[in-house]
Image 1 (cartoon, rainbow, N blue to C red):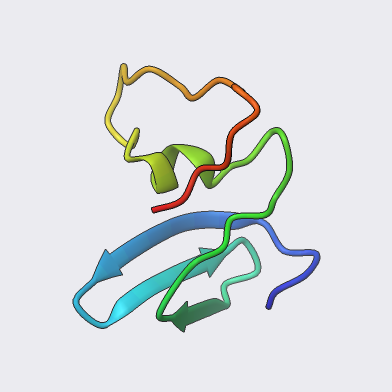
Image 2: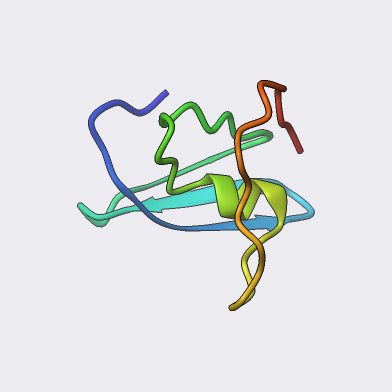
Length: 66
């Protein structure tokens, strides 16, 4: 778990997921839990909206996972 850090980017590959932070550090693991709040920086990545012009997610009261 990482607390008090801001994410700059995420990448997923065959070995898992790696997240890079603004302080230059990174963390790797088998899964990513994006519990960073209602203005989530990770939501577009988790939901696959990483390309320009993609429709952003809106709250429907359901749980999202990837």
